[in-house]
Length: 638
Ligand SMILES: Nc1ncnc2c1ncn2[C@@H]1O[C@H](COP(=O)(O)OP(=O)(O)OP(=O)(O)O)[C@@H](O)[C@H]1O
Image (cartoon, rainbow, N blue to C red; front, side, top):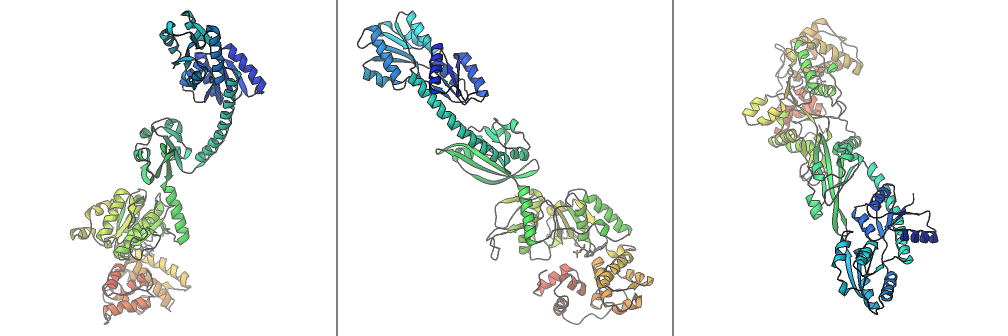
């Protein structure tokens, strides 16, 4: 099948063009057909489907094919100056007049420049333009025999005119006209080849792009819908191509782009539970907006890559290491807490953990994360009491370049962004100030964060586990805590019992920690059976943490191999006993000022906050407060 099809409406033109094509040596490149009007249209449509690049045709048949909305170009055989000169010459000959009055019925596309030529040749010419085949009859009826000497036109026009008794001339295409049409067709084939190659390259680019790409025409019809767009929007291209974009992407406003050429960058929209980023740009041809290109990115993917890079770069591993099996304890209270926590793990909702300091709130939070569907995603923990409120906010929500004095030049990703798809553990939530609470509430409500100093929202999918050792209801009544935030947080609550209420757990924990620290410090040490009972009597106000540090210290400093209650008394830490010592085992409280005591303890513990708090036998929150109260600077970061 050749790329050029010549459709001759009559036999004479068929034979003439066949000869010309042979003369030009184009037999293999051009196929010739004989067909008129309706049959020619059907033929053209078939040829278009058979990959023909261009059709060559003449007169009314060419007009009819073009009108049939065929998609491939149709080259019309023009009426050239030569054809006209020949026609006018014959008109003079058959009328015997020097200046015959000639009426020409011709399709408009055939009559370019005819009028100026008729002036030069001294012919009185009236052109009766034809829009379609029906016009032939109407125009013929309009011809006034008294004012016309000759009628020229196609086969049908000539037939009707001769019935009126007027002299007629058939407009014939000369060889030159046919050749120029064939050369034009050859040029088109070449241009289409280049165009097709470019389209192929463009298609490959679009098909393999990791971005979704949609192209829309000025009249809002979808022209391109690539495979990534299909995947991201969960729509098949065959259902969207040719459709109005407003019915398919009704959440996008294309007016500013299609009407004013406005670009839109990074509009984030949630589609089918996926956060997607949309860019819209106009297609401008010769300063006219001819359509728009929409590109789509999966934010989740972008964020995942960003988080991964960031984590790799910062070597910050947001990993939860504990699991439920690491939580030691057999007491019914603890067993029940573990049971509830495991139920909670399977539900993807906000959790609020209540428990005194050191009861294992973070341990439970990590275990919940590790048993949840988010277990392969980040677990990010932050203690809300550890940082002054403005720093806490920038840590949690991030900031943009120049958001505040001292802000990192390039801005910073907040922990919420880093925790995307994972869990964030907000310990000591009661210490978050009102601004932080407002922002947190927005995150919970809208599932998006806004960096400090920014006006762009970043969608985040984070499960929040908050913990407190304070009664939030008391804080609400004091106006310190937002009630609406409280209700949002307490969807699932978990109460952790203090160690003093866990029957039998002290012994289990003692065995566990002795084993742990014996290995760690390579010491051989055991407890006598009575010692467990002795340890059990202590209220352990700092709960498991306090107990764990106590055993660690004992393993390090005891020189005896077996720890009896008497040996225990010997190593009972005096400072450790301030305030909450076991009844009857009180030691004199230090006479130093509280500030000095704290500074001394900080030095002894190399600024380790947890150890310092343990040494002073206060919880970490209280220590942070006292540090602020006495304006004590801690050199090492905590
Ligand atoms: N049941 C337990 N079994 C083993 N280790 C425990 C248990 N409970 C707590 N721990 C250990 O005690 C320490 C304190 O636990 P964790 O930090 O989870 O307590 P917390 O309630 O979050 O404390 P705070 O409120 O002071 O932040 C951790 O080292 C943890 O591993």
